[in-house]
Image (cartoon, rainbow, N blue to C red; front, side):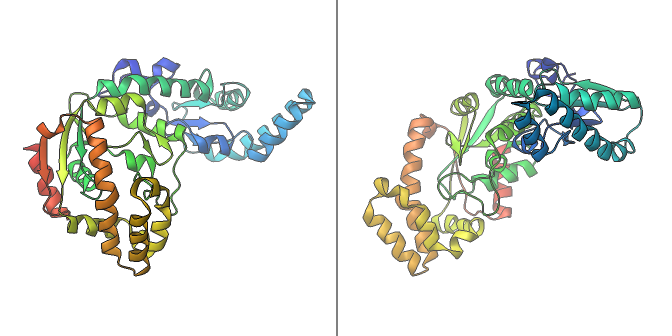
Length: 354
């Protein structure tokens, strides 16, 4: 089956299953720890064994394979029994399920056999999550090159992410990599209380997003470095972005400082902690600049600190990166944002579409 806007070469049929949305339920039979690292889109974790049981069976298997299988099946039957009644009450006999584990082996079969005995139609992912992961990697090498992008570039704090949201509200296709990565990029991009996903989970979410796009329409995306926090952007996407149409954004420094106050309240509340995060920049900006930042932080002169950090580090860094990654962008479209409030951004988005 073909998903709207997706080339047939990037289809779940490559791994022997239907489109993920065709299944009434996708069962991930692996342990919760494995599921947390990455899983198929829409999959629900119904573990055959929990993390502790999985570790116990694995340890015993090294010295007593028969005993490991015995205790493993005992745990499995109990766990499936606990989960199967609430499961079957939600689905009808005509519903189709997909089941997988790490390699499509014993844990998958335990779930599949029981569900088939009840009367459900069940597919098992041959090769399991390991095969799915291979498909994700292969797909992320090809699919990004089949799509067309329009890149929003500009110095930090100039409203790129906000304009991306305004374009989405206007009905445009947008790809917010920072939202998928749970990170705003740079040393200051960590979001308090929101850890980044694993690389594998990020890849899965990115592929799912890309597969939903219409290749006949452009995708608006924000210019990014190769890494967002600890996560790597696929090389094919990163390279294709740099061959795409670019819109250069700019905004008054007062608006950019205000945006930082709005979007980074934790930095405004702890300016000294912010400067501590910037200490690795000493070889780039020098000790004198860092001393200035620390003095402003200790005086709680937050606006002056934000402006100094942007003008002394981020703006020069952005100019170097633009010259390196987007040569010739001076000849492309430029957009001056007079304000970064919702009304101004909505107007700016419409101007890009006009």
